[in-house]
Length: 343
Image (cartoon, rainbow, N blue to C red; front, side):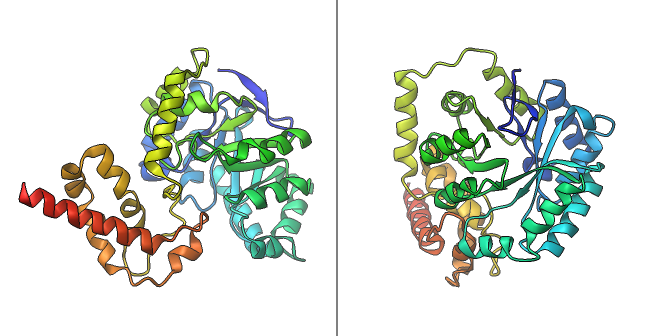
């Protein structure tokens, strides 16, 4: 494992971090085992959020007595100061610590969110005060909007930017990457697998390792998953023509509009299983229609509950036309059902 300084923070972090959303679905003992295994293999950076259910509590339990050995990054999605302070205090309690290494404003992508965050009494004011009090060492920000991310880095208010980056979503390799390097802001890579759409770890990390100043934070749900990624770092990185062709094949398969499985759209007030249904097209290609019909049946049958209220569209950070995409996927699902019955 190699280590480097995260931007201008002075924090020394492992070259690959740990995105803690997947430990939500693990029982506490298994989560602790996975976190400790990652630490024992050399991973020192752990990214979570107050919104990630009990992940902070699991991290606190896993690293009791090891606080000075790891770097903890967490987030608040609140825009008001009072709400953010409440979440910060809760994070400190759950993580069993008296300071957060990196506290990030979560998902600042829209103008109204930025205005609320920077208003008098807003989250930024409170977070900066908490930083002066020593509760927070550094302040960062996350976004899914390239335009907003560039704007946020230009303000000079944040030590780090967290943004999606992979060989499918590579817009950040231009202006945003250059700007972050110029101002020495740390760049944390969310969605290294494009929200699970890239199912080949080797090819995903061949791409990412071309940008050593960026810190990818894949999600892990088992010690084996940790070992799979870290094994890739034991070899020198080389991207071949065949690798580039495979990346291009993924891009063609997914197209320009696809679900990253961030789940901001959920829960649906009408019971539609949005995330799995949004992935049906890819599932059908990879598994074959025959297998996909049975595998995705509960999710696809739930699409009939969609009333096109548009609530999911408002929540989607990628502005996807979710109801229309669900309708198309459901039509494909029905066609596959008919085809399989005929066979």
